[in-house]
Length: 535
Picture 1 (spheres, rainbow, N blue to C red):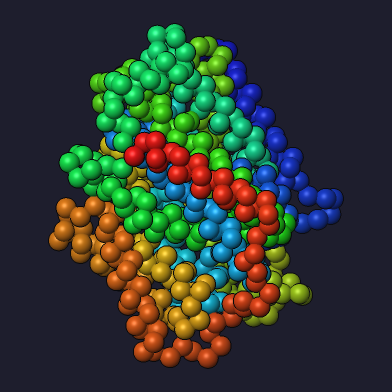
Picture 2: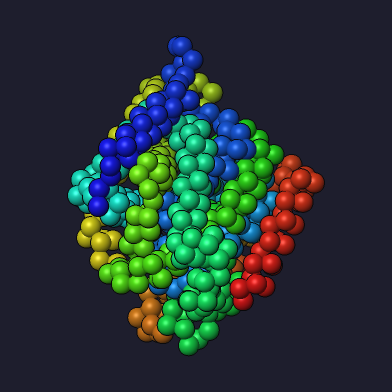
């Protein structure tokens, strides 16, 4: 399959338009040189709509659209729990985590760890996140994106891989986070519209032209097993989504780590004008998350009826896009590319942020927030522009590595989304322990935090080898509890270094506005209705 000239023209117009918009919104006033706050935190000026849209654009990429749709094809609606439970997690992040982060002027998650525990844990976790972002997340985004481009547009997958990576790099290379975040409202609008069109056309075809509701009714009747939200033990995919654990077990560990302590995601909220804007932004994102399964999972389930003989589940979404007429295909394809580019650019910027501020600046002993400007280890003044340049070089190196590593690392997986979740599950229990104790338990110290991080990886590996029948989500829950007990025990036995904790709770308020509270109740009621309907 290939794009018509009309579709191709639409895609080219999108690419030129979004690139130009990114450069325009991130321009600086005459005479102003872009500094680290401008490049990595969008000058701490993001409004709520940009935060909410950017959270979703960063999250919803090929690994979500192609990968989760593929899981919808294989597993069914149960995979939507990742989206729906994330909506509730975002509210927790907004109410309890952001007040502490913003009050303490945190700009990276490793920085928080240093201010709370000490320098060793900062370096350890910065290296971990860089490895995870480059070799798992970034590679999966561009690999699954290249599958979509290949299936829909007929472009050679190798060329698609390189093209997506380089466009995303150039898209954010000059403007940094501001270029990404302030254009994400366009990306998300296009993504939502395109996804709804695909869902509408697939259901309409299943319904034989009788409409979406008739198509949905026929779909639920044809594949009722794909509409079980809580899987039973006899389900062949129980190990991927182990029953009630998606509501009260290990999924909470994954969601809290991803939405609350993940630089790639939380960086948008850290760049907010103020706490109120950040909280409105996460509320906006929460409601968008409730809509995502209609856009992502439903086409995958529809493909079970319309394309039952796919070689790999991850081919489901690109295959459903073939139903689109000329012109509209170009627009929806642009929406898919928009999601891929936005998420890739966001990941690249976060990689550059962590390397530059948490490793490079620390190694050269460059203070990034001094009144008289940064200075190197010999005391000579260092230009903020130098650190921005380091960030840009890091971004370029990261995408080149990801392009080279994508095929051998991700190419052999049938369900890339599930692969990513399970691999990340080796680390997320320890990360969640470290941050929760760091935020809410004063006695926690660096020795306990490092023990939790190490125990999380080792115990996860041992359980995977020795007890392969245990679902990875249950494994995360067990490892979390063991790591938590170990961190608490060591923190009680080992005295913390003097003045190690520099995180202040003075002036931190967890009280939220009436609007936030009403919105939170709305999210909870919708979730109750969804699970009551599809239990």
